[in-house]
Image 1 (cartoon, rainbow over the protein chains, first blue to last red):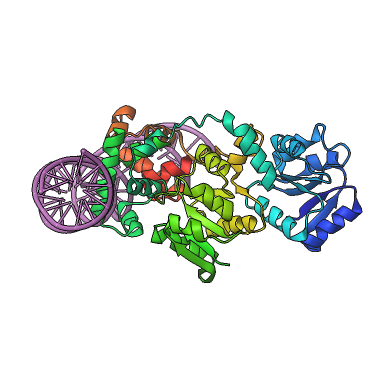
Image 2 (image 1 turned 45 degrees about the vertical axis):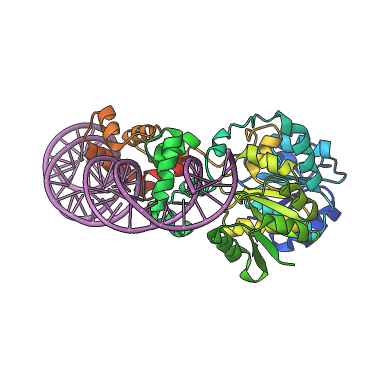
Length: 197
Length: 197
DNA sequence: GTAGATATTGTACTTAAGGGCAGTGTGGTT
DNA sequence: AACCACACTGCCCTTAAGTACAATATCTAC
């Protein structure tokens, strides 16, 4: 599946092609048509200067594909808006080839990409609004070793496997688990997992 | 400059080494010493389970190097806290090799790395606008009776209890579960639950 | 009407899970 | 020194979980 380059500027398209490899890029300039024919999970680099990209088309694009907003004049406020509307990334349209590859590669794996300072802004400004209100109170009553067992449990591992990983006897794993069961008032690993989820 | 692996768990260090290349990794387990001798821009993978990592050491680490917080049990609220304290990234300690390379490569270029859903949370949309990958697709391949068993399982019930509830023999419950295990390619009820979550 | 999916159950077996009891060792507190 | 929390382990026992090998019954589709 080629990467779609959504821009009117031939120069921009060219610099993207050069960075990402000419072969698997496909230039498109008509937003409206694209929104209909977009495949699921399709990767799109979208030049924000493109006429008609904002209106009704952007959310439609983002529903279908993984769209990276490419700004010629990046600004944290602007970036936040596009990300809120479903963008999978926000970057400088004239990023270096290295960075561009990085971004595409990141988004391709299903993650989102956002610059360092924008992230800092997000953490600083919106962070306080999060209901992180120490719902993690249980952590305090769990020892370091028990926490490791929990982590393993959350990966669906059996006692024997956990023992191997932590390099202790299976009996010890059971001991840690028993302790956890008591602390959380549950009967078995399944209920513990549900309690923690 | 090698990547520093800051963890007590040999198993974890090993999985990181395997992903990132044995040659340019360096295992360290003492936070206090490290904080002093850290080079500028040094890349560090920091296991959050490590004792003493939170206290006064974390900010010092982050001032000197690029520190990625590795959680054995990731949670958006937790992630936010570490990022606010200067982390260059927040990821699952047991990420796949591919993803780990991705993360390291991203942070190495000077960007920050943050998972998709955490970013969505930061953007204040809680993922509602992000195309989420067919979350309930599994329902189509599950029979009505199997779905009832799943519902009971999600309440942490044992086979005997499920049998009572559905008014069938325990053996039948086991049959339904076995069928589910095959359909989802898992080995037991715990993994099934994790698969469904 | 025969094939296939679904639901049901039985017997018997192996392995995993969990706990009881008992003990060792370490590190910090009073 | 005495205490305590934590980590670790062994032996033994009970019960739960999961599977192999069958078998019967219903319902829908071709």
